[in-house]
Each structure stands twice: as C-alpha cells, then as structure tokens.
Image 1: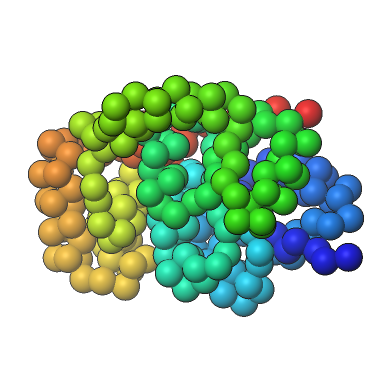
Image 2: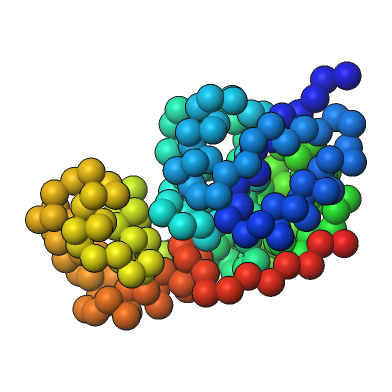
Length: 225
C-alpha cells in the first residue's frame, strides 16, 4: 500500500498530539516529521520531501503563510494544507495566495482531516465545510472572494512579513537583524516600509495587525472529535 507522507507543523504540543493520534490510526497516512515553527518546517521538508504538509498559520519565528511560500519555491509538488483556529475570509484568501491547496479549521472532524489529506494528494483542493460553503457564496458574486477582499489585504514582501512577525513577537531591531542575518539599518528600513504600507505608526499597532492577520496568535483553542 502506498503511504502518504506528512509533516505536521504546529507549535502547540496538545494540537500536534491530537493530529498525531488521528493520523496514526490510518494505514495509508504517515507522519514522518514534526515542526514547531515555520523555519523547522522548511528544513524538514527539504530533508524528508513529504507528500503533504499540515501547516499552522501562527507559529513563532516564521508563520505558516510565509513558510508555505518559501517551501513551495523549493518543493513545488508538495501539497500544503493550512491549519488555523480562525477562518475569516482574509485568512483563507491569504492562505490561497501563499500557494496552499486547502484550509482546515482546527475544529474540523477527524474524518475530514484524513479526507483532506487524501484529496489534496490527488491534486484536489479541500476546505472545511463552513469555509467551503462561504467560498461558494462569495465566488458566485461578480468579483468573487478576491474582489470582496481587495481593499482589506495589503501586499507585503516575504522579508516584510518576516520582520513584521518578529516585531510583533517583541524582538528588538538587533534581535531581528540577528535572526534574519541582515543589518540593523535594513531592519529599520523594513519597519519604516511596513508602517507606510499599513498606515500604522507604532509597534503596538503592528502587533495588533499581525494578530488580526493570523501571523501570530494570542491564544489557541482546539477541539478535535
């Protein structure tokens, strides 16, 4: 029997344990690696070349959306399923634009988690039920989901996303520079550009934006049945 290999990228231990228990019961599914942040997910994927990555959006150091973009540049055939405790339209749109082929709410049933993995392995897309119904409704409108959100989403570069996340996590410019292996003045420039693009002019505002965009989370609630 051909097995679908999976990397689980999720920073909360209890969530990983829940998904590990679900997937471990399936003979055709195998978790070959687990990551606690986006950077680890990319490194593991390069080493293990999984069929599917279950990718949480909000993880430390590098969030799931940016990790997805970077991972798919290296391994374009890998399928990424985004996990989130939130399912706002902006979250879903950002996930789709990052290259993900599906979006699972963390309250998705065990049956649907496994079905989603099998569907995306076949080249299909998969969204949790409530999200799928909402997408159908929005895409039936003249401009679809993208038009619905065109004024809500601000385009940030990969580096700006990385800097924004580290700012929101409370890192000083020096720490951010060390983490990203760039100069402090470069970090300051990225900070300036972020504030201009987002029309936000203090660190607290950038942090609130990062939370609202799903780049970081203040808390996670999980119910898997």
